[in-house]
Length: 558
Image 1 (cartoon, rainbow, N blue to C red):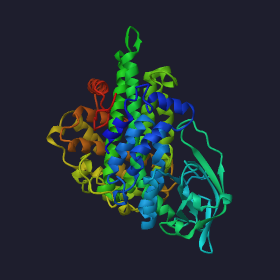
Image 2 (image 1 turned 90 degrees about the vertical axis):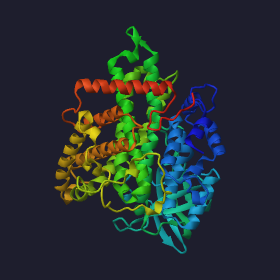
Image 3 (image 1 turned 135 degrees about the vertical axis):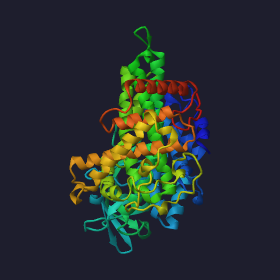
Image 4 (image 1 turned 60 degrees about the vertical axis):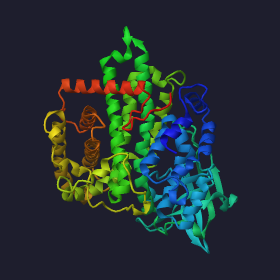
């Protein structure tokens, strides 16, 4: 089934009688419960099949199709999107990446039977620093014995199985930890103690739990991906989730922008509509441009999983880092439009405050933004010397969003350094006839100038500048890299789009991204005003026509 089918199944979110509409979603959030009607509906639809590769009986063949389905669900209720099934995908992707054939078939059977698998990685004392996780598994006669705690784990009590991350060697380094795939029923009840639920301000319906293991025996065949390969498997798997999550967050941002537009068009202030105020129109236009930028950047990352899997080791953390900042900033900007209405938990705009609370943990959970920069930093000197402005651009197919793709093969993902940076190399391509003059040509030249400066600075980084102990200046370079990468991706998407996306929208996207680089604006005040007016009018038209704000512009119920 397609995202259109799922939208039809979920119905009109504004209908108060819809059991999975906004009213029901908000009521479940107030009770701090998962939306039961939503889980029943997704069970009937067999939604977990989205997370299972087709060769094991599921529907997962393309990362972009998975992201579109998840975006559709997250646009309605991020807590349902995470708590019903995506948390299982966070665990299962490790099995698809490194599991044995028996483990993969077992995981598929569980998920296709509407069961759950918990990703049991997190420890409060160490957060995303998995290399220092203390929960320990040691070999005993014919099995492994687990001791330690895991905390802030989604669906741990509700899951029939779990992927566990544990220390299997006291030695430091990347071979000190392993992963295990176990069924809850295979663990002795007296060796595992469930911890109290962790309450949260966002994703309030999601059950965040923990467990304490005491000399808990794990089956000998539970080892996932080989002893000492836990970190490597996680790094490969995270390349998938780090680009799927940014693509999903476009869904809640769509709902937030739609809600703010409704408020601005409906409410009266100073003798007219709130939308008549120039500042309000500017905010809405800029958020719309940010949404398009996130969609383009994450879309390229999703296609890279299929077409250039060796490069996603840098593209995935870059997408996760920058898009999470952009989405959080966009929500904050929209609060200025909604005012006090952005905090109300009742009424026509109440869905905004839930989306705002739910999106915050979604942008830093699983892998934090700082952890993403730590992954990017060591790769910058090599890419600067060997690729930027001199390497070959990626194939045009990488930027043709929605076009055909080969089947996703997660075993092709690698944890090592990429050989090149074909997305950034787009900036070295000759400028087309339509780009040589006017604002677009100036943006391209500005981006090339910024990349030349970044190349010089990154090439000069020393060994001490590319570790977790690097100074703020080094991390600032990694930050600038993500902005330039997103701008290059957007430029290539519009070029490949064959006129499907208006050039004025691209100018708005590049204006927003270059603002993050600092320096003098590329657009004159008059050009920016015209661009933002175009974006505002386009957003209003999408809203009134019940079309998505993203690059697909799909019709939605309502």
